Image (tube, rainbow, N blue to C red; front, side, top):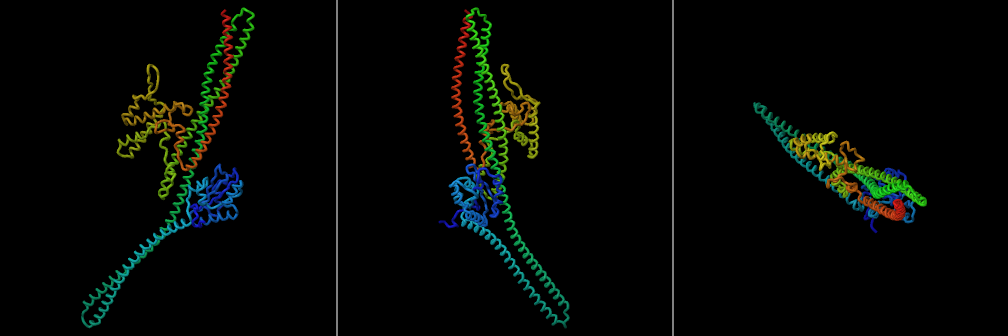
Length: 632
């Protein structure tokens, strides 16, 4: 059996609490991480994460206790308390096998939980790693050793400076002491000379000797005072260095804590933004699935409608023909009385047939109106879906910028995240293009060639771009001409002789002209398209955001736009894709059953149609018989 020091724990120290809901429909407050932090505040956890899914509705709470040894002791205390109450890890799995579980179960997260398949295992592998207590202790010891080595180096350099100053002080002190001894010696010599020569008249010589002694004494005292001041200054500087070293160490610890807090908040923002994008992507996928189903139904309805419209036209012709024949039969003056009853019966049969056909035609007309209404609603919903995807791509751009700033912060602290670069790829092929917006790049290039000052060139390009954008959106300016071929009007083309376009070419050159003409061509082409006729007013010019395939230079479909975004949480997206594929499989099976039923109904309709055709043939034979009798 492995010793406790060889057991691998999830680090940062983590505890797991299971069965937090106890039933599928839980109270909203239990999903709040703050609720679980308050509930287990006696163990002093730093973070709480609530995990739940449809496959396991009981739910889990992952409690994080940090990286310090105090957190390890609190984690083991939580594990012991649940184990004593018979609500530990082993008790939880035994109760699940027996089919019932009540109350909360808790334990410390170890290698078995980290390597497990499921919600908890995936979360732990994303957030933490496995370490033994000996590994953590060794890392802590190495970190402290590095800090001590650094401090010892600083102290050694300071001690070296102190020893240098002490040696200089001793040297100066010895020099000063030697000088003082010489002064004392000269003073004694001076007194001796004065005593010997009191009776001798040597006042000028004695005076000069006294003056020289005073000068030497004064210089020695000044030098001693100066050396003492230098020593005091060095001592003050040494004290100041020591104080700065202590304050710098405190400041480093505070900055590290502040930096860790900022990193934590940035990671929370990153996770929140990722969850929002994943939710938005899921909503759009479900919306796309719904619209694809509706589009398929509408396509089938359109085919059926076209077929029925052809039948309706044929039916109208037959009704008109029968009405004419009926009028002819009513106008015929029968000479023979024995044929009168037979003709009346034939006329009644024809009238009955006409009534049946008119009734069928009214029913088909109602069905056609309902199908047309359904097609119109599907077009409106599809356009709404495109607008939602445009908004989603715009949000994705903002999120990409946020992720880029987070990535820069993480690079500063030498932290690497494996899934982040894939999330920050950005939208390259599918973009949001503003239809009818003039390209600012062309005007900027012209201004950069014209002006040497980059700032002035940028401001002038902005002014020119805004001016020509206003001209393009002016509804009174329509620089197009109609091209005729053999007297037939076919299309509109740019009028190259338009005064404004000629002025643009002369002033700014061909590149600016091409940018303006491109924007002018986009507006009518887009406003007159079939997909936009219900959303945009073609009589007014305006810049319209559109999902655009920049690689192929065309309008992108909804499916192509949905294939752009990639985010953090690849496993979650795989599960979502698997769920959607399962749904599509069920829908396909339902469609097959529906087609089977429709096939049976079609066979019945074909049988009915054959009978109707037989009746019509009999009526037509009777009409031909009547007409032949009339001719005779």
